Amino acid sequence: MRILAAIALVALFGAAAVAMSAAREDARPPAAAPAAPRYTPIPPSATHLPDLIADRQVRHDARLFGRFVVPVDDVGVPDDPDLLPGAPRDYRAGIHEGIDFPAPPGTPVHAAADGVVLRVDTSFLDWTREQQEIALYEALQLGYTPAATLDRVRGRQVWIDHGGGVVTRYAHLSAVETLAVGQKIAAGTLIGAVGSSGYPQGGPHLHFEVRVGDDFYGDGLAGDPLIRACARLFAT
Ligand SMILES: [Zn+2]
Image (cartoon, rainbow, N blue to C red; front, side):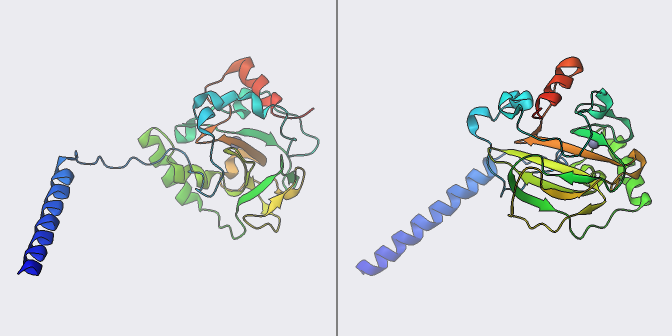
């Protein structure tokens, strides 16, 4: 009898718990349809941005000054605002998130700092002109470039994790070196070659991007402060 009572009690508590959790579910407001992400997410395997600096002030974080080498030989850091972060990209209703180094196709591209390979597009298949046109039209309709489109516009890529939430991206490459995700890499190591994959209309150049957490270095800056902030990234 005592066992039966115990079973009944357990069943009663169980039913109550189910009812309470169901009530909690009901209390939740209906979830809004998820918006298309605007940034290509950095994989969770990347190092975490310390909470202390995990705000938008990182856009011109002094801890990055002088930390990089220019990833393309014999090319200066551009000072044309159209080649810098924040420049409008009217063809996709978005803004530029990196620094463009124009260079002939095939020019060697080097790691800008010590780090760990986070992504390398070894088996890369470029999109067709038609796929590109559809995606860019959709971006214009949305008023911003969805992350997936932005990723394809960047073409063949290598990403390097430098720790502390800092990741560099090398985009539009024509080829990549034999690299493995997780491989340690030293500043100056050959990682690929300049190309125009993803957006051939832009002409051959290296798109070099410094991500700090979810943000891109240079976000929110303009004019001389932006030009200075970009130049200061690189050791002279
Ligand atoms: Zn670019």
